[in-house]
Length: 337
Image (cartoon, rainbow, N blue to C red):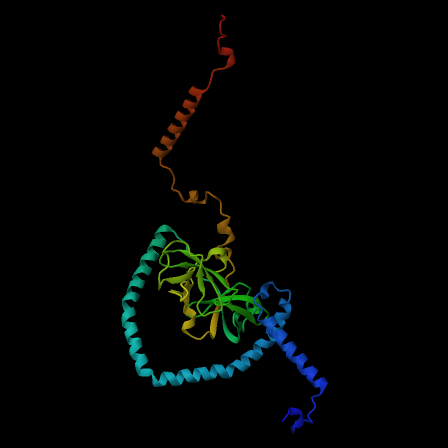
């Protein structure tokens, strides 16, 4: 039986309502495409995006609260039933890490003494802001999140974002109270890194998967499975030494990185208010006179003063002896005086 001959033959869909629903769906799709644009920081629609994120941020936080509460409840129930095995595992890890802790304390003391002897000035700590992830924008390639801290707290485009395990991403857009974070796994993410064991440089490139690629690795055999990957600080976008992950071999033969940030849920993060290395040193230190260190020298002894004066006198006598005679004192060739 055809549809038009059945019980629904008298149903009529109003044309106006159909057009209105289509317009609403198209508008929602445009807004979602605008939010998920990976080139937002260079887009002329950045003010519109900032306004949309300012409105969608609190709304996303309200809708994400039940999901977050359910996750905390499931973690609590799972921890209750597996408390015994978890306790044994933690005791075993604690026993393994105790020698490493003692060694780290000893190396820290030695390093502090070397810095004091050599007069090395360590880098000052970078100011941070704590934020919470309130919305998750995911797609086949786009990996981004909205954070509930914005320009009102000093957050700027380019600030690195970390959690308790390591580097998570960077800020690519800000409004007054909301900022947009691009994860390391996004296709638009490019991070200069180094291999901790060999100090070899590389570029961490996101491709939409959970494990970004290591590209342009310098040196043959400079990367091995299990090597720790840190931020190199090249280009001034990230501080040097921020932990990122460990190297692993992909099924396609390429080098990839297992991110430390994947060890737990990316719920609460910290935004590093880091712009470039210029903020880590004062302008007075950069513009100091070139011979400032001479003011710290001790006064010369009488013997040193005598030796310096004698050396200066000898140099003066040597210059006078090497000076040519005047033209009037020279004899003319073939003639008499």
